[in-house]
Length: 342
Ligand code: 13P
Ligand code: SF4
Image 1: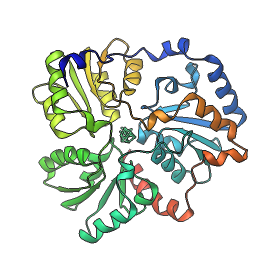
Image 2 (image 1 turned 90 degrees about the vertical axis):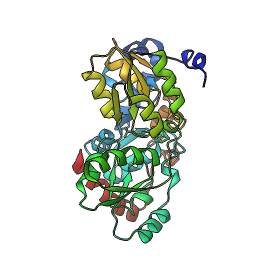
Image 3 (image 1 turned 90 degrees about the horizontal axis):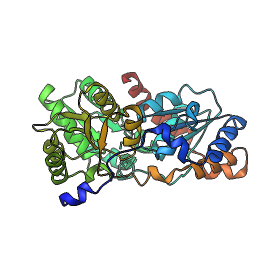
């Protein structure tokens, strides 16, 4: 990647409140109106397009915006009968597992995740056969049937504490190999524990390379680095050796910026997290190669409106998350264990 290419990439986002002026107000109004009529709540992940990251009481439509752990917790508290999940399928499945009595919908049932599709329930059974007795930690970015075979789930926010909590000196961590290597470095240094890893990758975060991070470092000598756990280790070292910053969860990234005195940051995570950051910290600058998750971007205001319209009609099945009772029962065990580590 040449330096000229990097410089030409988008480097900032509008504060979120300014989006109100740009987006079609009628679409927002229709969604807000239907939400009440259909007794629905909208939960949105930080990787949603900026127009879906605007909270309802500021003129947007989302009732809650958060990381995957925050959204899981919120899903257990909602009073409305219908939950519309603006995120990817494994997240909506988690909401359904935690609230099986509710109807959970996703505006595009094909919004997947390269990590979740990298491993099946049978793969986990094979791992358990190969390493008998070794606890299996499943990153929440897995499908319900895979989770059902695991001992505990984790998200990027609580992965370290969950790994620390086991007495076993060896743990299986699935499916993200890069996150696993980053966690392993910390865990081994702290406790000597060893992680057995799967070979899954996030199609977004794996694109942050050693070369691009070195180039950013050269172009922006005073910027600090914000890296998600899912970024490859070589890119992490190229960023954080001799430069300040954070390697962690989405939540860690948001917190770090709030506590740092720096005014300029290089974001090595999903591009639209830049919108959240700019909305929270309008006086700081965020630079990113702007790599977007194609799965998250399948959700938009139009299919969100169609989902709401479908509730109570035969078209609802196109958007509804349906899991069999046995999968819900079995997958809820590792998810509920994870929620003790919020
Ligand atoms: P968080 O757990 O930080 O919300 O991340 C979810 C995700 O999909 C990361 O790519
Ligand atoms: Fe999956 Fe990566 Fe997209 Fe997150 S950013 S949903 S891990 S593909």
